[in-house]
Image (cartoon, rainbow, N blue to C red; front, side, top):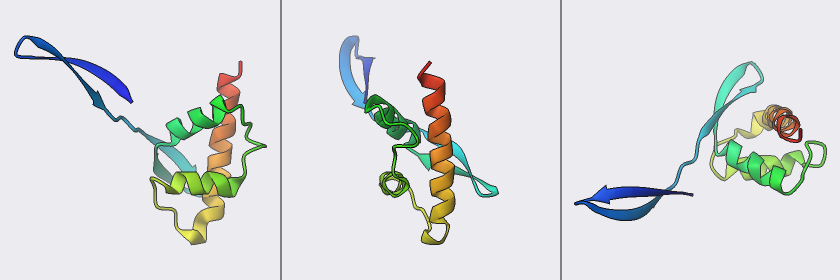
Length: 94
């Protein structure tokens, strides 16, 4: 949650605004937008989880909280998400 400072009638007012972004992920031959993926990856990273440690079905369950994932291509999503998280993890562990 990002705190934002605003001015209203010359006074400072604080309010909060939720910002959840979308990430493009290559699933099979398609490029899909996945909501909240960066936030999810940040959470995994803070917990010290590597791509090898994350259970694919757990990742699918977490992503499904904000996205629709068709059951018949769940395996493609799992593969794509693990690949993206591995890339994310490698870029931040340095």
